[in-house]
Image 1 (cartoon, one colour):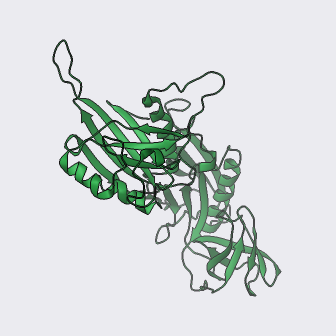
Image 2 (image 1 turned 45 degrees about the vertical axis):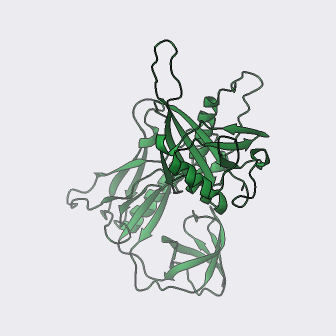
Length: 397
């Protein structure tokens, strides 16, 4: 996970140290906060931090954690490369099969069999050196894009229901129709449920269509004038005030499936045993049998958005905390009782990162006179919402 030629330290600030200059004694640092201190362990103001960097004076990071103050190595502006990395969320992969929101289509061959392969690239190297593959099959009896999309989605959901957790979401989408009109009403929807409650009389009939958050559903029942039932379960987040994009009687012509990677929940992430990563996959789609007169399969696969790691996410910071704690020189591992990791990173928090790549030449070998450089990396993670503290560390750059 980590490849480096030098020691790495990490300091996490979840709690403000206060306004600039409010405290100067490092002993007064609040639990969970961090600051830049000088050679006498006095907390520096923003102006003094900038001045120390400009003058090349030695400074270091102090953090109060578990009632103790820990320190980074000393560094100076003359012997360090310092930069800021803004928080960025992970980007999840989005891939379309058939219609992609603007163009494309699914095959519409009647009496044809299809196979959809989902190659989970992120699983390569876990069980062996090849990725896991999930195979989805469907039969297009009537020869419409809508039937094929619906059957593929149903089969996909059935296969994925056997997995320990859902890591790819499959949604049916369709091209815009003149019969689907934007309606100024709000909906109450529940993840995994088909029932929907409308803020006002909906006027819908069985067989009508509704598009919610870009996903296409058909109405299969209208129990009351303010409720209706979807043909497939709603997969978004439970919400009592979702705006219905559009609804009406028109049936879509071009239809597709949208596959989206689902992030591993912060609440379930164990930084001691888990490695933060993204869901990455490739699709293969084949018409494996069809009548002899069938035309070539027009189905397209569009890799709309690639998976990309973010910066300063909880999972990244928490995993690095476990790794870097071992570099502080204190005994951490034990057989029993289990190792008590400090866990300063908090699930759900987002962090601005300040990186210091420094070196020190303080050591001189007494026998040879050689003066080797000691390399080190310091990561400072500051909760995005701590304005004064981010300004304090930004003065390093």
